Image (cartoon, rainbow, N blue to C red; front, side, top):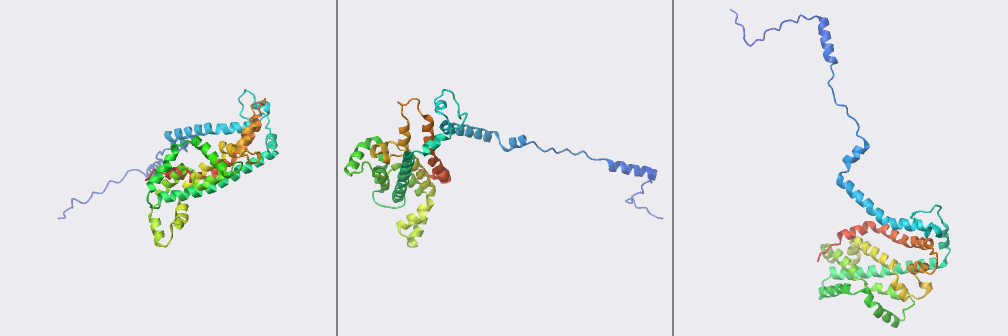
Length: 326
């Protein structure tokens, strides 16, 4: 007898479909297409919304409003400098004139006193910057990196001078400079800067220098460097952000100074730009030539903008990194 295996599959019954029907079935299955979602390219506005969240948009809006608020006086000043005297004294609020009057600047550039005052301001600012920045860095280095007896006491006394108003020292300083026969010269304005004038600037530099690791000083001492070489070759290059910060503060303060030049110079050939601009404002003159005053003011603020643009990267770093350590 022949035993059949139960696990052996039984043959499938043959299909009764013809070849034509099988071909039509295969063609129908091949013609079926699975539905897929159509991808559409998002619009530019939608991509911007996805890129910027609400907090970022709000921050940029506030920054734009603040920028417009601070730029408005400069735009107003420049627009007024191109107006006629009638438009400058008009009660209507117009930022720009109907026809720009560039001859206002031509008239300004034709004045000899403008060039002389500009040169005096540049000369005084450069001398003060060189002397004050150098002396401030040396004093800040002594307060932050060197160990000497009474250092903290002297530093505290120096900070105590911040509580003394500058107006309280005008008369004693004037008497002292008069005894030196410095009145009607640049000396009362330029020479004091070589003696580290300004406790605030010394404090800023000291705080920044204290953040520099002292391991650099010790390594340089092992290599045979003296303190002066350490200051010049190590500390000064690393302190460029703080130096840029005090440079901007010094330049803006000295460039805008009116009281000291007016008090000590006392000669027209020594006058600086603030005095030159102030002399253009004659309240007894009617109508007041605001277009000439604004043209001189535009030329007056240009160096400040240039200095800030050149030092803004280091200036921002100096403000951010200058802490209150120590």
